[in-house]
Image (tube, rainbow, N blue to C red; front, side, top):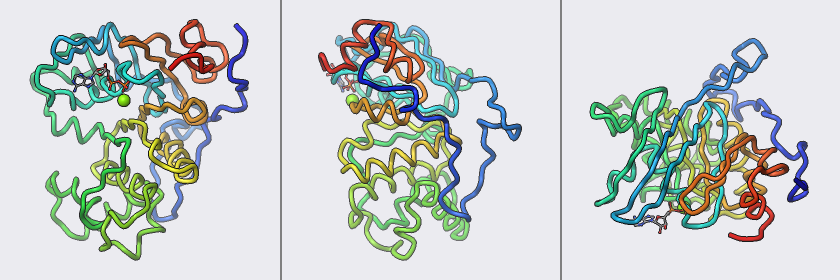
Length: 292
Ligand SMILES: Nc1ncnc2c1ncn2[C@@H]1O[C@H](COP(=O)(O)OP(=O)(O)O)[C@@H](O)[C@H]1O
Ligand SMILES: [Mg+2]
């Protein structure tokens, strides 16, 4: 099939191992190199089998089989209304809150059925953090936004909260901009800063998976670039699933891409393959802008 979008392999991220942006950040060992410089086998963090989802009588997803690899960035693309947000919210059971909704099939994280009867949903949502399209900080101080989650999870000690707030802000690449203004309202920050604050707020409860639903669509190009850099850096330590309408963004930051259409997952593959050699005609039509 003819290469599409004029993207070449060099346009795709070479899994660069970036340095944390600050010397005092906790340096995690990089699971991608495993200390040996060699990349270990790709491991599934999330397994989704024969998933279907209904809002009342309306079916939003059907027969989805889509595994998410640990420490990768997986991009979900597809036209509006095809079920990307629904898929994302299934992974941390946010859809449970919608009256009349119903799920079929299996969703496993680290092999455990997250819809099993013994699952602690509060703990699941700590492990699987969600970042929304519109930055949505609480109308509280910058500090309180980040300390909020750890407090809910029972951390009271001021010195420990201070440490977590600092570490989370550093990981979210926001520390340098806010370290002298902790007490300021989060709403005084720019949109891009607010979005990084929301990412810090999620990181503060030490999640394993980050779900991001069009996290840059409300941001300008400079703020978008900062979030994209941040996502690549975070991929060393987290498993990231991002919904994006921006094909270039998916190509720049993701390792794997999955294309959704009308409630189905049409095709999943290495990002470079999806954008240069899609197997399905519908994928090709979408990424070349013929519909959507
Ligand atoms: N709370 C809801 N109640 C009823 N229908 C919904 C709800 N949320 C989404 N839908 C429908 O489910 C389908 C998939 O929506 P969504 O997952 O938001 O798609 P996407 O994120 O790809 O735009 C759409 O037809 C949408 O109208
Ligand atoms: Mg959506």
